[in-house]
Length: 432
Image 1 (tube, rainbow, N blue to C red):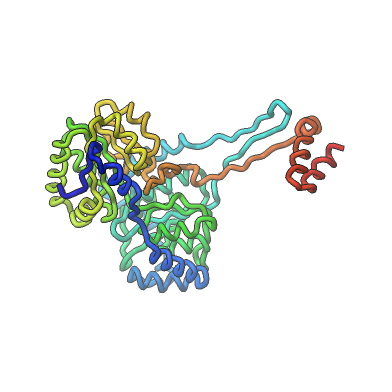
Image 2 (cartoon, one colour):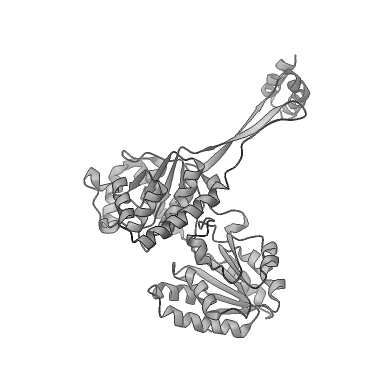
């Protein structure tokens, strides 16, 4: 086998597995420095910086006013011109994504506690959200739906898309998805400079409050550096999949599942955990054959050879969940007859796919849950994109004389204890 093969029974397993867990396949310091320069230039020069960067990186001239935007009419035309089967597939995906995210909407709270204090919280959407849509290695209408629909469900008033259009070419599927999702503005700019424009605003592009959406290392780094100026969904790294599969699976199916992430990028990672060494060898053979049949063969081969891992355990249920929790992978497939015990035991995963008939690829498109998920072990502390990423909570409280009398003296006592006499006086004047 050409990929890394680990056996939990081997004496060096702990060290080898730790190196896989700790490996980082993300941007280096050079990218961070370049992005910082780009963002500062956009902040200082606005539209002029976007003109320069778009010509340099995309070979596209933002010369006339019409060169900057893709109109709603163009999006509607792209939708009308789609093959009916493809249009229906996008509509099905949008409907399922919308239904799933509508169920996520939080409830306001307003109540009076035992002391007579009125307490509660109100959820409100942000005013404007910026959505980054890639246009380089691949353009994904599914990602536009996954980002725009939760924002619309949350109640965001202004949805702004930025997307690179190399040589002026726009992906008609992306435009059709923008029509379905009801996007308000589409700007023909991409890269870190587009993220900077959304955060700072330029002469043409008004700033937004939250920026979401996938992109390359420069886009991810720009979002990281701008967090605090705006909200972001997450700092996303290369895609990853962990497949937990026993030996009764079809090795062709599992091979295809592993390659579904390997074909994204040379830095993507695909990992198989199984209790059957012979099955692992079969999967490897199927991968070698399937790669030759892919239009994405070069990317998938580079990813699999550099980052593919197979782990053979003695007891799948006893060992795999603990390994999965260490990896905290973006996607976890559980290809066994009874996935429930694994679901209960795996605490850290972006999204979990239950059973032999639930490939991760279905989740990328039509299942409903969001496919924008934490990578790089961030599933230990973060979640996939949801309506909450486009909302914020404002708490409120109200006291009358009786409830103030019940809780006010304790507030004054604590204020004095913290050495904050003005705080204490604010309370004590009302007590007297």
